[in-house]
Each structure stands twice: as structure tokens, then as C-alpha cells.
Length: 383
Ligand SMILES: *Cc1c(COP(=O)(O)O)cnc(C)c1O
Image (cartoon, rainbow, N blue to C red; front, side, top):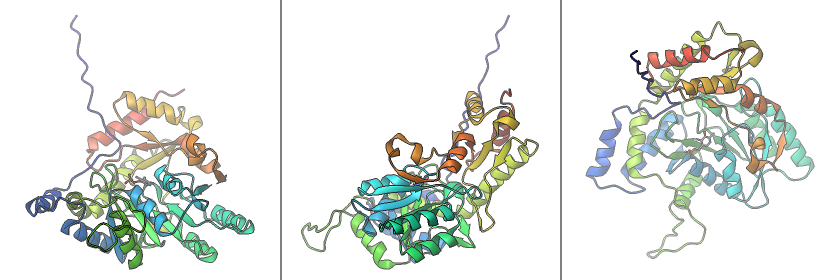
């Protein structure tokens, strides 16, 4: 008997870079003018264009989103012995930067309706901090999976307690809160251009603020903190955190298609929602009425009772079908490295992690790719 060779379809990844075709022109400009340096006209233009796009007065292009968050804490004077509040439901980079400064992370749970920082728990934590006579040096609010946290009450609380707010908007470029871009509500906002983010420079980040002196200081610290002198003179510790002029060229090309990418991401979400509408065991990340999500990644919650299989069953079944899917972020208070951190609440983040899955959401996926993913999810063996 002739054995038929099974051809396995190519692997569908979670999200991969999607070039617009406009990047090469800017990169070629950098090459032609020999600006192959961590500064230059592409960097200047990218900063200007980015600041205008999000509606911030100033922006500094940096080597990563993590570098942007780290510099935000340095600029706010966070140091050893300080506490900094951050969401427990996030990616580790949000709170690693607190530890880089030898400060102590204080974790706060998310709320069900937004999956982001719960303002009520934040208030309870700030009150407890004040009663203890030890207010945090900063609050970091994270906007996960393309959706803004509920900023009005969070901004009001930070004002009331006089604690500066930093926004980790790494996953939410293009998202708005009451019509305004995330990242522009706190004293400082951080964005990422890592390879899987909505736009990419292969690696990079941006720090924004309406305070020009903060951003000027960020640029100074990011280029090794060289004091003005003909020789190399240093009076503070610096960092090598600037974005390359070549990569800024990629960023300019990508920024031009950001709005288009948001629309495509939202269409991908709609496709999945339609595909699973008959499935009571599958829920989607809610979109809060105060803003517009980019749906950076389509996130689902699998109810094992109703669906007859759990999140891990679905993920493994997709993997067997050559499709990459990833559990939602494992909360920081469950991470071995942060096990000792104080955490207010935590059950919401734990439940999201237990049941949540990110589906392939790359804007370069075809309708056929998306259909293959949806079919594979529904074909997961049920109990
Ligand atoms: C990606 C990400 C970061 C870090 O950005 P990099 O550019 O990869 O350093 C920080 N916070 C969150 C929530 C992220 O998703």
C-alpha cells in the first residue's frame, strides 16, 4: 500500500513584525548619510512624529520599553528602600525596573471589567501606606493587551496622595482613554517597539512626558550621562539606552501605518468573536466603555465546565496543529523571583492566568490562517 506523506501546514505564530514597505526609505536615508549611530536625524524625526501622534509634548527614543520604564523611575528618584506600586497582572519588565533601583515592588490586583489595575484596591493600598507613614515613591499602571486601565480614578488617587504616576503603555500604543492616547496621563509614559508589539523597530522604546526637563534629562542619562566638557566628565551614573538612528528609520515607517494596524487588530478580534459566538465556554477580554482598545492580542477565557476542555488543553491542541498560542501573563506574585512581594488581592489575576489564552493576532495573518486557528480551537477534544 502506498503511504501518503502528510504535509503539515506552516506554523502560525502569535504575532510577528509586519513591515509597511515605507521603512526601507528611511533606513536607506540613514545609510546614505552615514548616520549609523545611537542618535541622528531619524531619531530626532521619530521622536517628533511619535510625540505628535500620541499627543505628548516631548519624547525620547530608547533602546527598549524596559529602558524607558527604568529611566522613568530613575528620573523620579526611586532608590533603595523605596516602595513602588505596580499591577501584579503584567509582564515581568514592568516590575524588574523597580528592583533595578533596589526598591521594593508592591503588587495590586486587576479589576474584572478591564483586566487592568483595580482603582479600589489601589486606593486601599495607598491608604494603608499612608497609615504606615510610608507612601510609595511611584505608581506604575500597566495597559495590557491593548486596553487602557481606568485612568481617571487612578490619576485622581495619585494626585490626592501626591505620588507620581508612570504608565507602562508597552502593549497599548494606539489605544485611547476618553479619546486621548494612553501614556499621556501620568508624569511619564513608556512604549515598546519589541518584535511582537503593534509596531516594531526590532527592538526599541519611547519615553514621553509633557515636562521637557524630564525628557532632556532622560536623553542625558541614556547617553552615559556625559557632563558638558571637552573630555569625558561624569557626576552621575549613566546608561547606554539610546535608540539607533537606523532603527528609528524603521520606527518612522511603522508609525505611518499604526492606525491601519489598530483597525486590522480589531478586525482579527471580530473574526474570532464571530467564530466562537456559539460557544458559551469561550469569553473574550471585555472592552471598557471609557476607551478604545487596539486588541493587540485577542485574549480568550476558557471555562472548562462549559467548554469541556481547559485552557491548557486548547493550547496543547493548537500546538499539535502547529499554531502558537500563549497563556495570559502569570501574575507577578506567583513568580518565584517575586514570591516575597506584598500583594493586595490577587484572585482576579490568578483566575485570568488559569483560564486565559492569547490567540495568534498578527496583522499579516490571512483569513485562512485565522480560520485554521478558530477551527483548531473548536476541534479541541472535549471531555
Ligand atoms: C513588552 C513589554 C515591556 C518591555 O518592553 P521591551 O521593549 O521588550 O523592553 C514592558 N511592559 C510590558 C507590559 C510589555 O508587554
